Length: 101
Picture 1 (cartoon, one colour):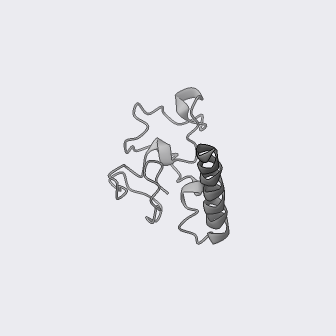
Picture 2: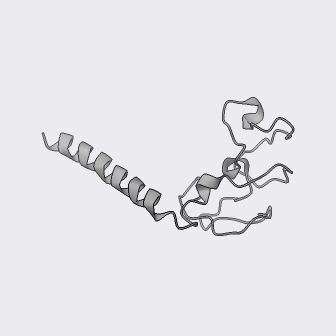
């Protein structure tokens, strides 16, 4: 799923620098990478990678690998998708109940 809009990433790897999500965000960006770790040096857990200035734009990083969590909707992991929907509806219900009182 896209980090920005939540759309499933259906492109196969390796992702080209020009590949974009339906929302227009670059898919081969730091934000979609498995090594993206905000707060670490250059926001990247891969110590050999060169820090990118813009984490949301496409880049040529040799270490790029799509974060597996963005593939969960594509691989047919319906059990975890159902769990997420159930958790979201429980969360929404919790706050709906507090607004009524």
